[in-house]
Image (tube, rainbow, N blue to C red):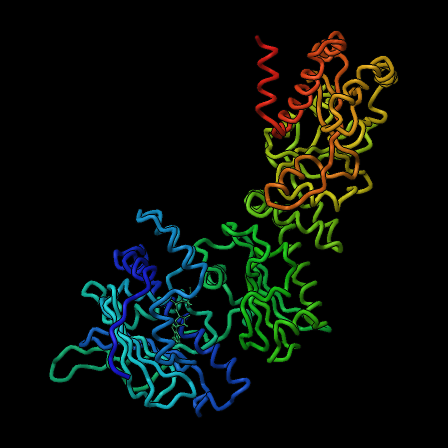
Length: 629
Ligand SMILES: Nc1ncnc2c1ncn2[C@@H]1O[C@H](COP(=O)(O)OP(=O)(O)OP(=O)(O)O)[C@@H](O)[C@H]1O
C-alpha cells in the first residue's frame, strides 16, 4: 500500500477543532479514554478468539502497556488486542461510526462552554489524545493478518491524516502521542500512575508500566529514577464487580459508572451483589442522576453489559431488564450462560429469565430505598425517571403493586408532584370510596379543568396527571390497596355517599325538566356528541365533555392522532350545567334560529376548556362574533 493522505469526515474535523481548543478543563482524561479503547480491543479479541483460537498467536495474556520517552517527548499506549487492518484504521479513526455521536457533534453550537458540557456526556474517545498531543501516530496490526500488513496512521489533528503500510510483528495497537510542550508533565511515572489509579483501576486487564528504581549517582552526581528494563502492573487488574464490596470506595464505583455510561455526574444510586443459588451471577447496577435525551425512545439501547465468567459478551443486553428500566446502567456477570450466547439465545434462556427477575427486584428495592430514606434523591429520581417507571404498570404485572407505591402525582390541593396513592388514601373524606384523578395535556389544564369544580366545592382531593404515559398506564391499574381508581372525566359523576340526597334529587329533576332542551341540543350536535345530559359535576362552567367508562379520553385520542396513529372516532358526551346562565339562555332561545349556533359554541368551548381544538375553528369564531355584535 502506498502512503495516502486522506481527509477527516466533516464531523471529526469539527470535533478535533473543539478538542484542540482545550475543551477539557481536565486533560487527564485522555489516558482514561485511550486505556478504555485498549481494553475494548482486548475484549474484542477474547470474544473473536472464542471461535478462532488461532487469533491469540501464542500471545494470550492480554494487557495494556503505558510507557514514555522523555527525550522524544512521547507517551505510548500499547495493547495486544484485536488491532486494526489498514482499512479499519482509515474507517475507525477518520470517521465517526456511531450515529448517536454523529448527531451529537452536529448539535455542537460553537459556544465553548455549552459544547464542553455536552461533550462531557459523550466522551470523544480516541480524539481526546489531541488534548495533550500535537501529533498522534498509531501503529497497528489486526489479529490473524500477516506481519507485513500492519498500518501506520499519522495525524496532527488538523484536517488530514496519512496512512501507510508497515511491518509489525506483534498483534494489536500502539498509540504514540507526541506531547505538546505544555504537556510534559505526562512524562512522569508518578503522574501517570496517579491517573491510572484514579480512572482506570477497575479495568480488568493488567496495565503495565516500565519499572523504575532509584539509582544513586556516581562521582558526586545526584541520584535519579532509572528504568530497570522490567514491567510492573500498576492497577488492581480485577474487574471492579469481582472484588469484595468492602474494598471498593464510592469513588471507585462512580468512576466505573462514568466509564460505562459516558455520564459526567456520579450515579444517584448503586447496587452491587453476588447472587447465589440456582442461577449464579453478579450484578452491579446504577441509577443515573439524569435522564438521557432520548429516554422516551423505547427502542433505545439498554444500558446493561453482559459478561460471562468475566468475558465481555455484549453491550446493551436488553433481555436483562424490562424496557421500563432502560435507564439503568451496569454490568451483569453470569457463571451459567455459555460463552457463545447470542442475543436470540438470551431471549429464551431460563437463566436469563431468573437474572432479569432478580435485577428488576434489585432496582425496585434501590428505588424504594431512595423513597423511604433519601427524599431529596428520590425527588431527583422521580423528576427524571418517574414517567418511564409508569410504563411498568403495563409491562410488569408481577411488580405492579410495588410500582404503584412508588408513583407520585400532583393534586388539586398540592402543587408539587409529591402525592402517593397512600398519602391520598390517608386524606380521603369519610364516605369517599374512590381515588379520583384527571388526565390532561398539561398540569395547568388539569388543574383548571371544569370536571374538578364539584370536587373542589366539596373539598375532595383529585390527583392531576399530565404525563403522556399516564392514561395508558392507568388503564392497567384499577385499584390501589383495595380502593378503586376513578377518572373524573369518564362516566357519569358518581360521588357515592359524598353527594347528599338533595343534590341527587336536584340532578334527577334537572334531567327531567330539562329534557326538551337536552333533546334539542342532542339533535343540533348529533355529529359531535354521542349524548347530551344534565350534570351536577359543574359549578362555574356551563358545560364539559366526558367519555364513557372504558373509552379512550379525548385527550389521549388527540395525542395519538398527533403521533400519526389512527384512532377510532369516539364521540364524547356533552354535560351541561342547568344552573348556568348560558344554559338558561339556551332555554330561552329554543325556538330561535340562533339556537344551533349557541349549541355549537357550548360544545366548542367545552372542547377548548380541556385543551382541544374545535374541528372548524373559523366557524367557531364566526358564531361567537355573531353573538358579540
Ligand atoms: N486500541 C485500539 N485497538 C483497536 N481499535 C481501536 C483502538 N482504539 C480505537 N479503535 C477503533 O477506533 C474506533 C473509534 O474509537 P473512539 O475512541 O473514537 O470511539 P469508540 O471507542 O467507538 O467510542 P467511545 O470512545 O465513545 O466508546 C473504535 O470504535 C475502534 O474500532
